[in-house]
Each structure stands twice: as C-alpha cells, then as structure tokens.
Image (cartoon, rainbow, N blue to C red):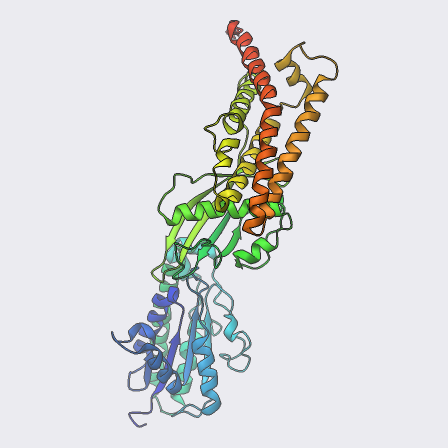
Length: 502
C-alpha cells in the first residue's frame, strides 16, 4: 500500500472531555502504525492556527469522525454539533473513504451518557450493530482494581474494543497481515483498551452522582458586554430554577431549562408579585455586580403571606467570555420556638411593635411620609415596592408569632378590652391597610412619568392617613406588650426540682 494511503480520523469532543479524547488519540497511535493511521483533534493544533479553517480541512479529509461524549458539560459550554454538521455535509460531496472501499463513518462513543443529540438519528453508521453506551457500575468507581475486573476486554460488545477492531478491519481490507502480526495486533488492542478504561475510571470517579437542592435556587446569567450602567441589567438576562417548587410564590416553575428574564416576569399574573421579584432580584444583582454585599438580604413572602423567605447571593461567577453568573438562594425563614411559649410570644410581639414604629412612625424611617415627599419620581416606585415587601414580612412575622390568637390577645391586653373593641380595632386596621395596598398597587402600575406624579401625591396622602390612624394602636400595643413582659420578669422563675433516682 502506498505511503499516503492512510486512514484519516478526526476526533470530536466537548471541552470537558478533552482529556479522554486526547487519550483515545494516543492509544490509537499506539495500536496502529502512523504509516497507516492519521489522527486529528483540536487539542493538538499549533499555537496561532486558524482553528476553524483547520477543522474544516481536517473534516473534509477525514474518513472517520469519532465523537467522544461523557455528558460532562459545564453551564458555559455544551456539546457542539458543528463538526457533525460539517462532516455530514462533506459526505454528500465525498461519500467514500479516500484509500479504502468503505463509506465515510461517524462513530459515536457515549460513555456514561446517552448518544449526543446531533448524532442520535444516525442508523447506518454503527459499529457492527447498535452502538450502546459503555455501561459502568457507579459503585465500581470507588476502586480501580474492582472497576478493571468488571471489564471483559475480549467482549465484542465493549465499545472501546469495537472501536479498535472496526478500525483494524478497515485497515486490513487494504493490507495483508501475517498471523503473528494479527496476534500482536489483538494483544495491543487489549492493552490500549485497558489503559483507556483506566482513563475512564480516573475521569469519571469525580463525576457528580446526585445533585440535591433541599432549598430553592435561581441562577441569573447576564450576557457578555452588558453595560453595568444600564438602568435594567436584567433586560437581557436569563434565569434558571433549581430545587423545590416555586408555586408557593404565585407562579409555576417554567418548564424550560433557561428562560429570559422578561419572559419569566410575563408568566407571573399578579403584578405585585412580579414587581416584588423584579425589585428584590435587581437589588441583589446590582449589589453583586458592584462587588458590594451590604444589602445581600432581601425578604419576600409567599402569595398567601403564610411563609416568609430570605433571598441572598450565594455565589458569583465571571467567565473569561464575559458572562456574569449569579446564584441566588431562597430560604424559608422558620420561626423558632424555645423557652416558655408566653415569653417567646411577647418577645416577638415587641419586635413587631417596634419594627412597625421604625417603619412608619419615625421621621427618619425611609417609609415615613416625610421621606416619600422628597423621593424623586424616578425612584418612587422602587421605594413603594420596598415598603410593600417590608410590610408583607412584618405581617407574616405577626401571624407567625400568633398575635391574632384569642389567648395571646388576652395575655397582652388583659381585662382592659371592652366588648367589641377588638373587632373595632381590627376593622379600622383592615380599612387603612387595604387603602395603603391599593394606593401602592396604583403606583406600581403607573406606566408614564406623568401618571406617576399624580399617583405620588395620592399615595402620600393615604400613607399619612395610615400613619395617623395606627399611631395610637401601635403605642398602646407596644406598651401593653412591655407591661405584660414586665409582670413576668418581675416574678422569680419557677424552680424545677430534680430528684435523684436511685
């Protein structure tokens, strides 16, 4: 056979499988004389090579396209079908191998995964029948000797053995080998396969077996060259969901793996929920991208306000490509119960009463009417949204503490409440609260600056009425809680007698 009559092979792989693809190339060269076999793979391109042009040239001259796939793909990469598509198109112009009487072949080698989608439809290019993935017992990945012992290196169904024998059969069709040469050939194939299985072991033993998310997590990906000075860095971002169901927030988890941020917001039917999520995520993303994590805690409640959650940035990844990836965890806030139930309830009641005062009734608060008067129109919606979120969280905290339960109301107010007084206060509270939420909803829905100007004045008026009608309620409630707690702490705690058991 002429010196130039070599079998030409191109090895295609994703970035994460480069080590294994390189090992395949090395072992093929060991098993077959370089005079009869040429291997090309991108990892061996010289520095400065015009790699796209080189790949196209190698694919045009390749007799066999080998595809390595282990399913190990990072979020920044994926299995590329470029080589497959180009090679399929090249076969239309040149169906036969250059020096061998065979059709040009595609040989997928899926290891611990399914056949990649770009070649899932290939039926006529199998190695002696359907090419199954290399089946590996995950438990055997804990010990190399045990792993190797489970491999039958003489089995014709072993994909790695089949790879070598198929290439051998092509080369044998054009060159004669003696019985001794064939025996040595077969022995070398087994040794090469053994080394490749060791590589499989080393590469796969650190693969993730299971990935569990006991909490909810979302991943925001902001594309390359997205300007940080943009008013809305989420406009071109994508979102991906992990962990438990998100239906508790008033929307179902989108079915696709990644969804654009605007498309995600469009799936939320309740405008208040959509605006709340947008505001909380925008704050976290802006802080993270600026390298500031002072406000790395955002509160959000379930749609029924029976559960409260903390959002925080747990990880930020910046790829060399410029992709910005931000991982945000959503963890439910659990109200711990410890000690005496009454003192625990009163402690939470003091927190609710004082936090309410800090939020609305002190001029220094960011949510006081005075602060809203001097808030610019462009910033007004965001401040109103923060007020709604904080009030939602405060109401959840009150409900979680059981402050609406009759026995706790009696513990706080004692016998000072007259007939119907609780109902009257409750009705008054619901009236001003509903007006405040309604005014906030109008601000959030304002779609022009002129509309926002008109809604700003109305909202501040409603907020002033809200504060005026609740200041006495808050003062009496907080004072009663402190008095009830003082009565308890003024008395010595009960001593529990521990008897020695003989």
